[in-house]
Image (tube, rainbow, N blue to C red; front, side, top):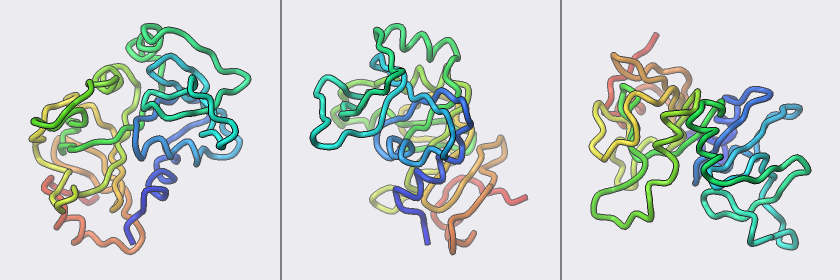
Length: 210
């Protein structure tokens, strides 16, 4: 069976390492915080100026002033620190964030990423994705394998405006885990009971098996 949203986040949490500073994108990536391995010291960073984010609040804990970059209410920790967004982006651009887990609309087999706009649709802003893919040490994308129309999102070449070229290190979809290469997408792992033929049928990019 393909992974659901929570299983996707749980699989993505395996990319974390103890001591990492991590930035999570909006959508499915925010769920990764629910699956941080026990005993790991992970510090979550947000572009809007917060280092050390706590879990999502219970109803009686909600503080409208505590939000992440996706405008979701969150909680703070005893070690949480606050600063301007300019300092937050300095952390990102300076290469001080170990890992960013992002969503995507399209990813190419070369690791190009398109995740900030669809032409003709209202866009509030590009957010921090372009800075993240340029400055963070490792980029992991988690996404559905196809769009709502059932069309492939893993392509030979992206058709949407790019966030960055050759920036994605690993892609985790509901069908499996793939690493971009110059020749195609290398299959690292398939979701339980998902076979290679299903992956090939739902992927435009070249699929490589070692």
